Length: 338
Ligand code: NAD
Ligand code: UD1
Image (cartoon, rainbow, N blue to C red; front, side):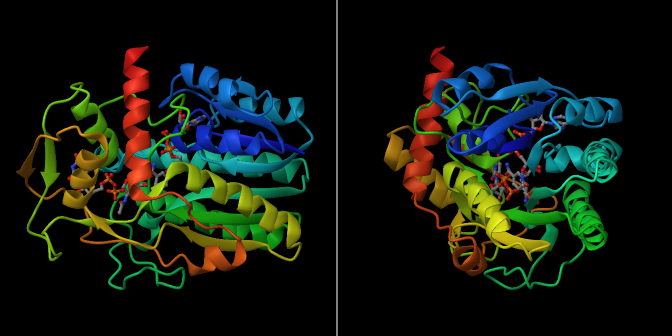
């Protein structure tokens, strides 16, 4: 079976492509807007079968048409391709709406036109819950307005997929709402490699420890949490990657499933200071930091109720926070050496 992985040279897509390559013929598309072609070398070094790569922009409908013409036997799509920098989306909302929505619409219109039978997995985010007051956050949580244009694109894409799945019985979709993926493949061949200065906590910590960046700024220590810093649900990226193969099997096994949503997180929350302390403990590296002001749009605490994924996807996270932080550091060290 042939599976299309959009954004497959990115952080989560590359780890998922490795998992998929055990059982499926895998085609990656990416326009390299936030990834590096060197990742393809890493993927093919550790993947289980050869992965096909097509460089193209999903916002270009003609490119998408050519893709499906070349690979008419695609039966599954995992749609990672998107812009994901929350603060950049506040400064440049149009680019985010343009890229994240048009890329999805182009894929769907081609699937529709070709009358393809497709199992589709969408990379959603806990950002769809907005400022949730209930913890842990379950899929039944009433969605609040998103706190950023980025989060809003995820809400809109979920709605587009819901509406499309209602009119197309050959189109089955699962949206996975990721919490905070961290870490890297155990080989150290692939990991998180943002093109610009990292916005997320763990790549900033590893780059700061590798002396690529200066001091880490902790965005606020006056939140209503035990140590004053924000709490998130950090999940090893390989556990997250495996959730995609579980979701694909779920769609293949449950023919009646048309449109479902799952939280993918560990179910546990850790504060920013806990992450720094754990990183120092497992790597022996000191993280130099200062306390700065709160980052606009940050929520105090978010962690997943993951019971639905455990029950229906037959998935469970296997790695610890320490495993994830150590793998992130091993990747950083390995990459900087090359
Ligand atoms: P990433 O930026 O590393 O990967 C995204 C990939 O998509 C990049 O390689 C980029 O070049 C590609 N891309 C973007 N627009 C494209 C287009 N128009 N055409 C072709 N390729 C395009 O991001 P990631 O962390 O791997 O995230 C993957 C998905 O998961 C995204 O949809 C993101 O919003 C979502 N997500 C990520 C996180 C996180 O913390 N990393 C959390 C929740 C949800
Ligand atoms: C955010 C989004 C998530 C999105 C992801 C991808 C929300 C609620 N979450 O995750 O949907 O998919 O980005 O980019 O919108 N921190 C510091 N210093 C730093 C960096 C981060 O203190 O230099 C803190 C943040 O304030 C936060 C925690 O670390 O409390 C995690 O931040 P980050 O890694 O950016 O993830 P989220 O903001 O949770």
